[in-house]
Image (cartoon, rainbow, N blue to C red):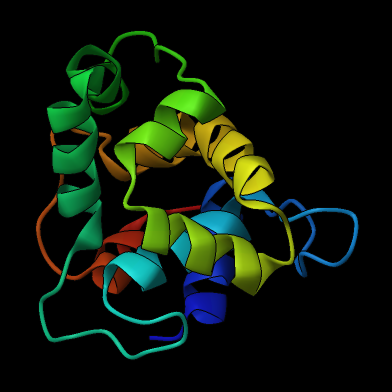
Length: 145
């Protein structure tokens, strides 16, 4: 699945905040779609079978000292916030660069947007209090939004 398609699905999940990223900045769904696409192995590449980069992303955040925040998004309580600097430190530089380039923003703007959108996206993708399994496309399409 291309990053733009994933961005559209995530945008719908996050409340359909407008569509195209344009020069006014990337929408939360678009930047997350670009990031997850980069983590899957290509800015516009296709998704491998049962690939779920969300689990890998959560592992990266946990290993980077953001375990409490990441777990709060999956759990049923309040979502803890993260900063763009924390996101930039946790993510592979190459993935952040690809996501920024694909959405037309700087890497710092991309990190800030991811920090704003990620808690809500993970929270909505894990309504049962745990990360779902299956491909990311299947997980998002299964949501009722």
